[in-house]
Image (cartoon, rainbow, N blue to C red; front, side):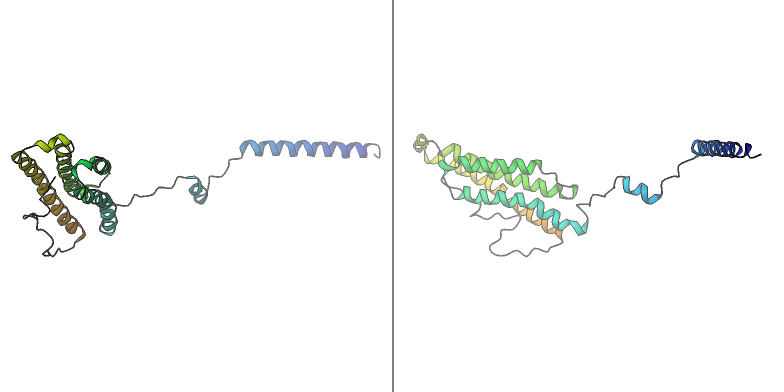
Amino acid sequence: MKKNGPAAILIAIFSLIVVLGLVASFALNTFTPPAPSPSASNTTAPTITNTPDACAQENLQATVNDFDKISREFDDAFVLAQNTPAAQLADIIAEMQRVRRNAQDFPAPICLATLKEYQLGFMNAAIEASLTLYSSFADASNKAMTQDQVNAIVAQVNQAMAQAVDYGNKYTIEMARLLGVTLTPSPTMPSETTPSPAAGTATP
């Protein structure tokens, strides 16, 4: 019995190791990983954000202000054009055309469609008036034109200026409508239907 004691213990230990190995192997083969918790999946899922509605009442003021920046930039160039000799209008006209291209490319939301129509109408008429002046009076040889020819050119420029004034008034009225503002005409502000003679007069 003493001789068999150690051998029996070794056999028992070896058998126990084999059994534990089989149990571990079976457990690994049958183990199913737990499903990820909601919190874990949320950390890897892409975040979905909603784009604010530019035409919503709470966003409309900022939308109009952002859109109007281009109009104000064009106004600055146009005022400069009105105070510049015709022969020196080339660079200013190029600047006005650049701003108009930016206005055309501006992604205005649907609620500003009418406002953009009036904006571009104003810009087109203002550029037309400036181009007519420049092309007619930039060349020194044009000094030989008769008074009737000069009057015809000035009339053409005045017509374009009157269109610009009309579009400018409509633009102001449409902006006020979008923002819920009531306009009060002033003696120095031309009405929508009566362009200002000063704004509609052009001289070479």
